[in-house]
Amino acid sequence: MKNLIKRAITGIIFVAVLFGAIIYHPFTFLILFSIIVGLTLWEFYGLIQHNEEIKTTRPLNVLGGTFLFMASFLYANGYTSGDIFLPYLLFLMYTLISELYYKASNPVNNWAINLLPQVYCAGSFSILNFITTTQYTEPGDSLYSPLFVLAIFIFVWLNDTGAYVIGSMLGKHRLFERISPKKSWEGFFGGLVVVLAGSQAFAWYEPEISRLNWLCLSATIVIFATWGDLVESLLKRTLGVKDSGKVLPGHGGMLDRFDSVLMAIPAAYVYIEYFIRN
Image 1 (spheres, rainbow, N blue to C red):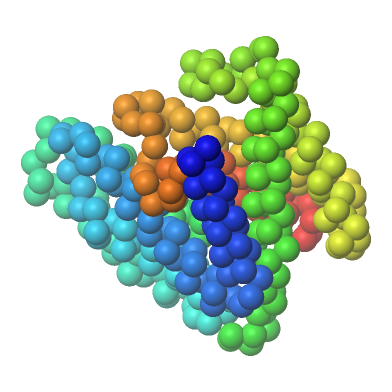
Image 2 (cartoon, helix red, strand yellow):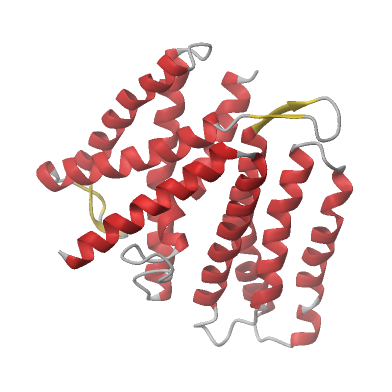
């Protein structure tokens, strides 16, 4: 019971801070997600360091990925040109060239494992900046719209809730037993139905976007969020850890909280760009 109360309090504060930062102002969004990107990268590179054969410079990698997110925000909102990404390009070049001097037995492993979090964490979160910004005319004059970002998080959480409740009651057929023995097809479809129903609240709030598009966007998010959860489960199983961290009492680490979102973000962006904005 004590752990349940801790989880509930942490969850409420987490959702309130997240939603408040997204809605209040673009720069509160920037500050909060820069912190989130930094923490997820810190956790990921921390997990990697358990393998003594892997050479990684944790602070530099975290700084590089956080810079990518901040640079993407400034570029997407029209505050700067593409030159803002040049320092990150230098960081990537350093990551590749440095292996010449480390004399590791398998430099390919170092390259792959050092660059994976940049794509998986920093890259996915950076796409949020292009989802929130729809257009701009003059530098600093952008249209910041948090609607789709809010939708992504709400759909993911509705899916988690629906899948857990339905899966607990009716789950018999394993969805992906090798990776996550508790997930079931009944839970998957239960979560999907809950999210499809919830998407119609967004259709009522934003009628300019068709109900069909809201249905398809929400279904896309559910499918890729499920894969995202399984991908992180595979990562933790491979590294032999239960939780990615302990930063959120009762909930584990940042990677544990954002695993589904990290895969849902790029999938949602593709759908939004191809079928809604165009």
